[in-house]
Image (tube, rainbow, N blue to C red; front, side, top):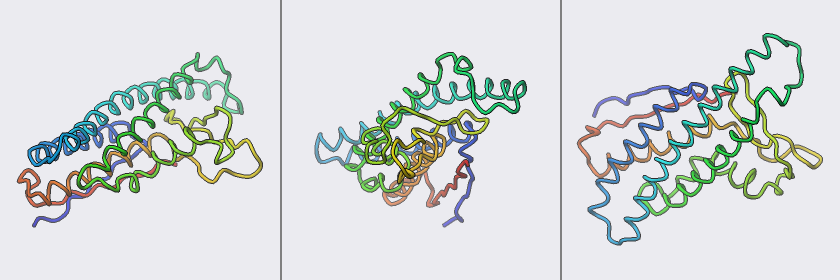
Length: 224
């Protein structure tokens, strides 16, 4: 047995997150190819296929969100060079792109939640929703049931110079909300790192020679 391979992925780096998403999709596809011949029902096969489709869909949405984030980050940097003391950002700065950004991010979370629901029926992924907590909590508490945290109004926060987004940071009732979004970048990386780890372990258990008996462990750095 070879020593564990350790690689650090930074959630603030879009290239790192893209690499992790690719690893998650590739590893899951290897696992799916092993599971399909052993499926005992058409329903089980359908769930295995759905998880793969949802991963492909998330890649489409995440790539577009990253593109929007880069555009917004450039505008933020340019604005702050001219107005370094400004406390408020003019709405014209984004030319309506923030609405597009929020729409794609919320759609990403809804697709990710459905992926996790389907994954409960795939061997080795039954408790995936316990590992990808960021995605689950944002979907449940800030999109589907915002009233639970007193958040009734559309709001968002732009994080640092990356253009990353945190959903609904402002509670509409007294006191702080019980849950605060860590940001799209953190949640995206956490989800795909969890999928990669679960798929790699399942492949190892099944005995796929592609892993070569080596467990690959990934660490990720959460943005502030």
